[in-house]
Length: 435
Image 1 (cartoon, rainbow, N blue to C red):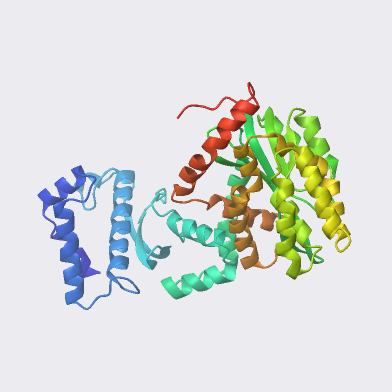
Image 2: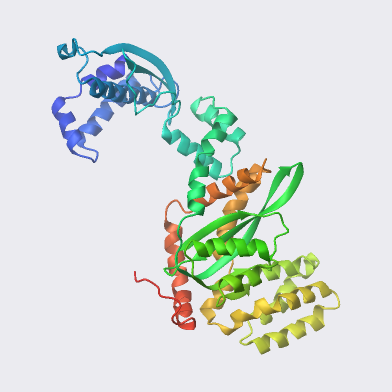
């Protein structure tokens, strides 16, 4: 450590003053870094790893910050005669190891005689810097288990962090999840998609349970995930009335269209909460459900035969194409015919709309990209001890969506044409803000 301190003490005071004034990397900063790296190489030091240069610099910065904090607390510098008779003074230091971005770092934390010093940069009993917690939460959001995260920290940083500690870190998101689930929403949404992701819960025995997700498109074409709700697989109108009423109480006075997948009791609940909303069955989900009743070798033929049904120009034309499909395939697969007949009332509404509106309803891009991220995280975990653990995993996956912001731009571009069609079709109910 002495070599780093010596190098840092040789910084020219004028250069240091310039560095403080300029937020961007200055020539003096680069020169200092170059001198430190050169010195480390000359001494055979690695950049990272145990006793590496970054670890030593982290130690220096943290100890310097702590020394500054105790100076502010006492009101005088170390060895300053002004402190004599002040009533409180420095009282040595104690060693403490904290986990940082570059691995475990042992630091000396100064103490005062009356024990009133409360450090802020590294608080009492704090064993990790906040950036480490953020890294753990990010890894959990990508689907890593507590054991995998623990192994990762041990392998990359040489830090022993228990699975219980990692679970405690990720539990910090629960407060944020509750706030997010109850945040105010927009007054109107052009489209709300309701779908489910199934997770495995250990409730006596492992069982599949649905986690329902409501995702909306705003009047500006942005994605807005409204909330998450855990079910038991037997949901009916009462459950959906509770969910939709919760969304309405958070500010959603109107939804032009709600796209769902034949969830029992949901259409009736939508009619109660938003009487003017159009209930639309997700066409892609309807097609996938059809394939479940057919042999694999017939999937392509069935998809080709059903395409004229959902691309028909009118409801009447769609009905004629469906009769043709039933005549060809009904004898072999009557369950597919019954599936479409049962869903017909919620399938046909979109046939009355503009091509742009049809396209977004027939496409799974809107919600499948979100579901794919969630499923990866859920699959990596395998199963969950309880409902809250499953919700936490799904929530963290949602919060990690689109970290670069590029997805948001693509969404806005993709939805502009459809939003114009919604504004014309549902005149007076949708008022997009200008951009």
